[in-house]
Structure formats: structure tokens, C-alpha cells
Length: 281
Image (tube, rainbow, N blue to C red; front, top):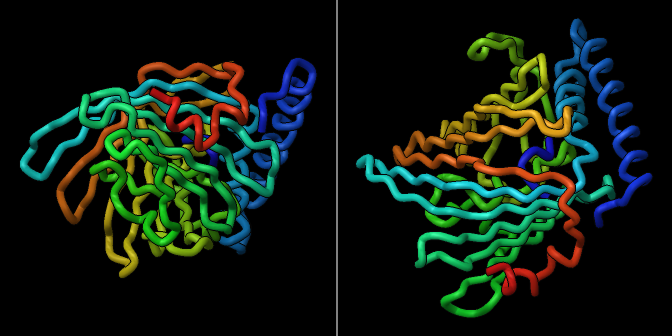
């Protein structure tokens, strides 16, 4: 699902037409998921759940977000960063969405920015602007499993989670908090992932992610990401305002707290270029 992030904004009638088409796709995906409820094909059901979840986010256009990143080390010491996160939906279904992340606080990271063009099976394009060096650095496709800015999120976690990036197998339905969830195993189909697989809990009511458990390249438990404090925008688009990542190996934790989200703000491709990284401050 393209929940977290990333063409140009369509105006007036085009937006309405795309949103109407997106609504039909979501309805069809939900119907497919229901029809597969008793299927003997776990892969088909897992894929249907992923498509239905993704369809709930189609047509959002673009978003501007302000958020906090709260880092907790193994000793319990806490540090905090403030950042902005802009996203642009890509209507080309063969490509992923775009996002631009900019750090505003504290002073030692102010102006640091990352631009991501998400793809399906090809390596995502990612660049960082480092104010101290005053230059844009391309992030290697083989180095995206490393920690992003000292957090427990990897570079690849900030890429749009396009359906075609993974294979899927439905495992079971079970309670997750006060809801019922589909539990689906996802295996990355793209090269150089830091994960062999992940288990995703998607609630059966709103089809939103509630939890993802990640396994490292040796297939050992690595991290758990939980989603909470969901809010609905434009009567359609759900957003989690609290994402909590816990590293079971290091004992470190990172919380992303969304403080403000605006939709369809008029962002265009010009706002997502390598030059925009330098202007982002």
C-alpha cells in the first residue's frame, strides 16, 4: 500500500475522474478479497488483500506533512527531530510515488533532505542533500538497508510500499487489539532488500496496516513496526499519526508522530527534483 509517501497534480475534472475510478477499483478489490475468503489459494488471497489495501489510498494527489522523529537508545535516552514530509502520487501504475523529506530541527541536521522516486522492481532512486558538504549525494541501491539518520527505519522503509514490490501469502485471520486482522507474509521481489520477509497485519474493517514484523537477511526477527492513532481525511484517506519501530536486536526505538497533514496542496513534479533538495531549507 502507498500509505507513507510519494505525476503532476491533476486539476478539477481530472481529479474527480481519477477519484471516481479509484473508488471503483477499491470496491472491486474489496469484492475480490471477500470472494477469496474461503479460497484454497493463500497466495491469491494475500495479493487480493494487498490490492484492496492499496486501493483505499488511490487518488490522494499529494500531501504535506509535519512530524516529529523521537529516537530512544538502548539506555532509554531520548532525542527528538522535527521534519517535513511531502508526497506526490504517481498516476503511472508502472512507477511508484515520490517523496521529499526535510529536517528542520535540531540545528546539526537542519536542511538535510532526502528525495525518493519509488519504482516497482527496479531499484528506487534516492538522493540526499547534506548541508555540511553542500552537495547532493546519490544513495547506492545496495546500501538501502542501512539505518536512516540514526533511526531504526531503513532507507527502504521510506519508499512507497507498492503492491508489485512483493509476493504475498495469506496466513490467517486473527484479533489485533480491538480489531480483526488479515495476517499476510510479504517477500521482497526487488534486489538488495535488508529483509528476507515481513508479516503484515491489515485490519479487515478499514484495510489499514496495524503492524509489520520484519526479518533480516538471515531470516531472524529484526524489527516490529506498529501503526496507531488513525484519522480519516477527505472522508476517504486513512493516515496513522503514530508509527513506532522497535529494533529487537539493538533495543533501540524510533517513533514518528504526524502532527499536521494537508491533502491536494498543489505540489507538482518541479517540487521533487534534485535541485529542490537544495532549496528545501
